[in-house]
Image (tube, rainbow, N blue to C red):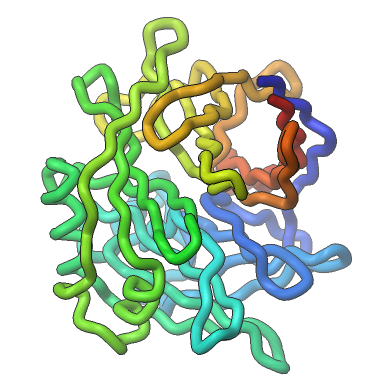
Length: 305
């Protein structure tokens, strides 16, 4: 498998401010909705504009959060963005990473005549049951990505091999998760499938762990993965390498490095499928710069297998 980087785009809102900490991307209308993991709003990226979309109400009066300002514990940490449907109409499902009650919320974004509209809901009970099925302590839950396989949502926990914890996933009915976020269904009755574990290998002694995923039309899955030298599954650390991993269920079929840009490794946190064929796929990916003053990058990638 080979990965080619066709284009790099710095993501800025129309007023020039950076799109911060991009963590997920999914199609919305004639563009793409980008989640920011340290903000209460997202970015609707279209060909000629990037506009803000209110996703969540302010937290203690704040809309952006950072470690430097001591507000990181308040952030909703939206990490998952995937295509969904509501009443037969296209939508985007966003999900927090877990580990704290503030990060156990979901958001459903629909497109109206006047633009995107978001509705959020707390689904703490669902996170508790997912953590139990993954065999992960609730305060170490770090659900960083998801892939949609027809009507099934596959939700991924970022692992940390240094602690003996591989990446893993569970399957849930996509419609049921959407309904739970919208308040149409009790989160406690959403079925949670069995745990799947993934051993993706290591780079320079640092294990690769899942950061996002996309389902392919043939049933296989492409994972984005990072070798991040972090002390646990929640805190950040230096990223020594990133890769795309082709899997069939949990079997690793191929691993390919993501090209560096400017001599630097860039951690892809959001992955979206543009098209796929028998010999490869075209992807959009977004990169968290880990710097609130720097715009997140969008990569256009081609993968050949």
